[in-house]
Every structure is written in structure tokens, then in C-alpha cells.
Image (cartoon, rainbow, N blue to C red; front, side, top):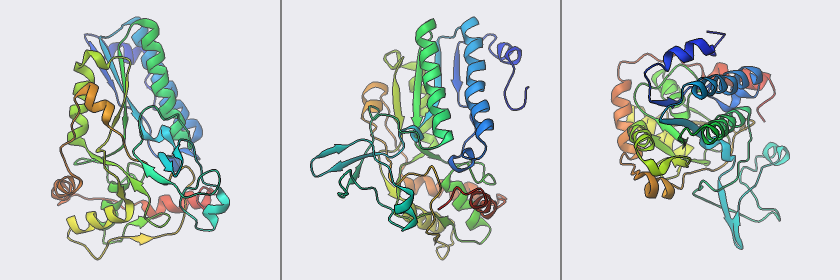
Length: 315
């Protein structure tokens, strides 16, 4: 190993006798990526390059790479006159607590499910690194005849999540806080929307990406196809864990790299992969709560929050 990145010899040995690869490895976390720039770039970018270099020498029949919803930046929106693809919030409006995205003329916009054709709008180092992973894999796959499928995962949750890493996902953060008798910390006003998908739906999507010949060279959203507000999700997690009084603390703060609304249009995954998510958010949370019973979780959310503030990446 060289730091956190496997050297070429290690990867070549791991590929012996292998005919398919799932590339799921990456450093995760939008906020942390904004101050650990070199580490995220090295692990996610160089790590992927090391794998691809080995695959050039020892091709496989299929490479499935974990991409991310983060590459979209803001999701797709609709105005009174049509679709609005690229929008951003200014630091000035965020300082004023004006959380909602506005159109070019200041008009109100309605969030809609985001399809794969939406152009990337990279709002964090993490998003950039995941975009690089996706494009590197598709590029090298096309050049060397290696069938590649990229899966853009939305907010994945389920049993055996890392509970003590504040950068692994919002549901893990909420659970860690509640298990320690503290209310989840919610950025902005809690009305931002996300798409939460059970690991029990993600795993079959990976198998379909491996098995479906027509998927080769394609990019697919993997989500539930449903949007939920963060405030509502925090309350659901608290209820599932039997602590409804700990439904969430609104911070009124913004983290650099965060977006307002984003959910998955899974039409393409349904039509090409045969993907069909089956686990509802509530059912998934019941299962998660059952697994959490007896788990120990170190609440490092306040520590991460202080680190972000100290580095000037919260507003």
C-alpha cells in the first residue's frame, strides 16, 4: 500500500482469476473534501487510475463503477416557461437565509427528478473526484474494449453503515446523534430534499449492471425515485429509534458544496437494467432501527461541524 492507494502490484495480484470488477472504493464526504483536497484527489483519482492501469494489462468482462449523484450539483428544476438545468445559490443569499434556488430572473423554481442527461455541475472536490472516476472508467473501457457501467448512487442507507464517521451519510449522522441522546443537527431550514435508497435495492442494481449486456457503456441513476425533506427524515429516524422528542435541531447554517434539492429520475435504470426499487423509506428505517439496537456509535458530528466552521466552509 502507498498511503491509502493500492500500488500496481497489489492490484494486479487482486485481479488474478477475476472476470468482473465492482469499483466501489472512494473517500466520501462533501464537506471534508473541501479542506482535504489533496487526499480526496489522490485516493479517488489516482486510486482509480491505478486500477485502470492494471485492467489495461489484464482486461475483465465487466467493470461496474460507483459514481455519485453529487456530480449533478443541484438537481433539475422547472420554471413557468420550461426546464432549468443549471442553477446555483450565491453566498450572499445564503448569508441572508434565503435557501431556495431561484431562476435567472429571480423566478421561483420547482424541483423535479434529475435524469442522467443533466450536465454535471461540480460543487465540491468530492463531486469532482467522483466525476473523474466515472469518466476515467468509461474512457479507458471504450479505448480497450472493457464493458463499463457507471451507477450514480443517491443517498444509500441500511444496516452496517459506519455510524462513527460523520461524513458517511446523513442518516448515519442522525442515528449516531439519537443513539447518544442528542437531536440530529440539520443544516439550512431542513426543507431541502434528497432521495434515500435502501442498500437492499442498490445491491440488485449492481447485479443487473453486471449481467445486462445492453447496460455496457451506460450511466444509470440508482435511487428510490422519491424525494423527502431532511427535516421529515430526521423525524422519521427519531420515531424509528423510539426517541420522537429528538426529531432535529435546525442550525440555519450552510455547508459549502451542499445543494438544495436533488432526487433521481430512475426511468432509464428501469427500462435498460430492469431496476425496480422495492424498499420504502419507512420500511428501511424500521430495519435500520432493528440493526442499531445494541450498536455503539461515537457521535462525532459536533466535532465535524466545528472543523467545517474553523476552516470557513460553513455560512
